[in-house]
Length: 137
Image (cartoon, rainbow, N blue to C red; front, side, top):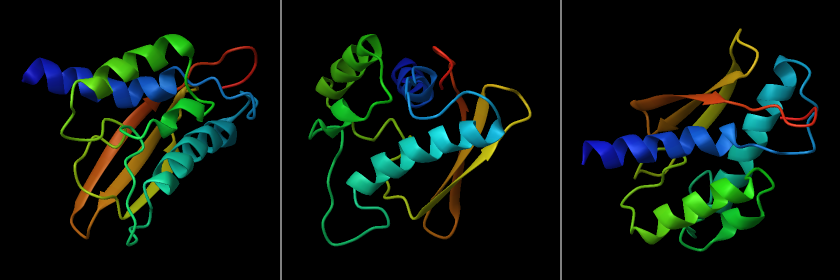
């Protein structure tokens, strides 16, 4: 079970490690924040963030396929994980519905911290590593 949780924890980080968005130049802290915010805005917007009456599961419905943030090799790994009947979403690393999120950039050139909030008391920080490819994150 520990290995599975560790593997799935890595999925959330690898989603942005494998980021290949051509929309954001890899120049400064602001561009790192834009990539992380863009990824999570798109992902969480699909599942109905903030929570509304209609709820969608981005993973099981395959909507992550056109995100623009995944390389083909990583996409194949994600498909394998999804087929394994996950009991939680590996992107926010949670079962609960997200109520808020924010992105802070790190002093390190390729890092951003995504702060996820679930209700009033539960907060989780994810350290995201970004990869520069062809001048973009």
